[in-house]
Length: 180
Image (tube, rainbow, N blue to C red; front, side, top):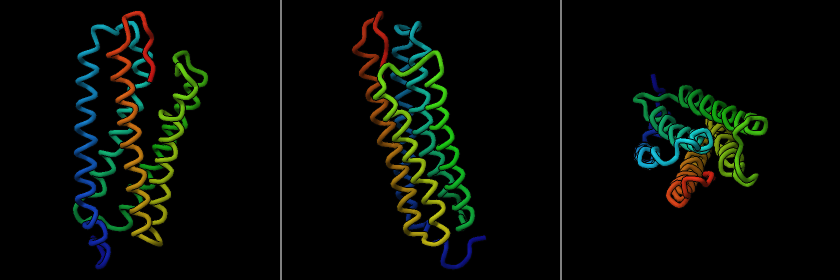
């Protein structure tokens, strides 16, 4: 049960979470449309496309999930701390695993610079979310600001990655390798 004085902090953010979750859900849907339309042309490049697509879908989904978790009715400070910290830590683990797997895996990014939008920047965004969760303990307004900054960073990164994927799919010939 929410303690007096805690609930209004989260209610003030409700519109932000509605907008970010709607944006993330819509953009995931559009990404699936692009992939479906291009699927017939690019069958041989499926492993490399998966390398670029999966993180982008995960980043959109992270924003959607975090928005949903933080708008649960009767959200308490403790439950918000747990949600944001666990979400941030899970994201850090995911982004870290991409750096490790992709360095040793058979499918790797075409350019080293691809590591920044697909691994490094998301790692920083998840760190903001986790730090915001920890700051909720002592300063809810600053903590919520950091969580929002992390969510917006993930949304921006995923939009950038989606655009790169769509442009690559549309502009490459059947023999070309996709890149992000």
